[in-house]
Length: 328
Image 1 (tube, rainbow, N blue to C red):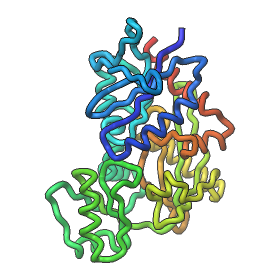
Image 2: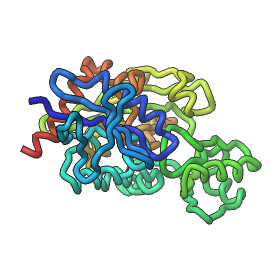
Image 3: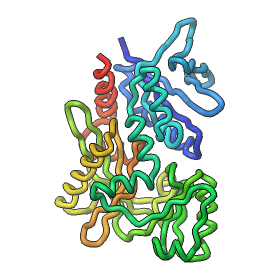
Image 4: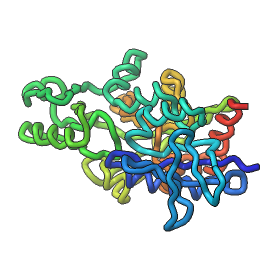
């Protein structure tokens, strides 16, 4: 009998459009011979399962099930691909833990920690991971332009402390741009992170682990056509993505070793992606940890899986079966 899988998309943030694209990618990758797969869309207004193009059925939130043709269908597994809240910050993970449905991503603690960029970076810094200088502002707090210049210098990045896809991110080059950038970032959330700019080569590395294996994927070099790796670069093709990255084999091994170590330090689960900047002297600097990476056909993880000579179908099956086996 096929296991019933929910690809859980949607969410309550600006990243909902990205989430729906990832869901479409996952639907194309999933082993339909092995699993019965449905897309479930979660918003503040409704939780629905998509049965057909114009047919949706409401989800019973008490046990994550639905009624179809008089029969109750309960999901065996949730593959979470919500970028932003509530799927990337631990909220949805807590819900699934409470009702006993296994899922694809990190648990509550790791999800919540990595979703908060400033806190995650400071935590990993205590383990010797190199990060840029940064300042955190919470709603109602202010900072003078002079203080920003002293702490991070110019240029710097002003960004929402939670969220992704570069919504609300500004590369600030001069004093007069600081306060407008902070205002823009606060429109995306209640916390803003101001981060020193690091000149170097941007790379990203995917990884997943199961009970029987550890798979660190080939590294991708990110060469944006714009000022930085913004929304247009990520989702409108305004970037060159080179897999494997044009770095030495020795540096590649160091990045992959660090990626595996960070995965274990945070207690991650499923497939994640970690972004870095390589600065002068081959210094590896952490940018951020992505525990719900994009899964469109052109996203980094599918690219890296192909470069490794693997199939996305098999990777997803590894992740799903690893969690289902824990329940046997």
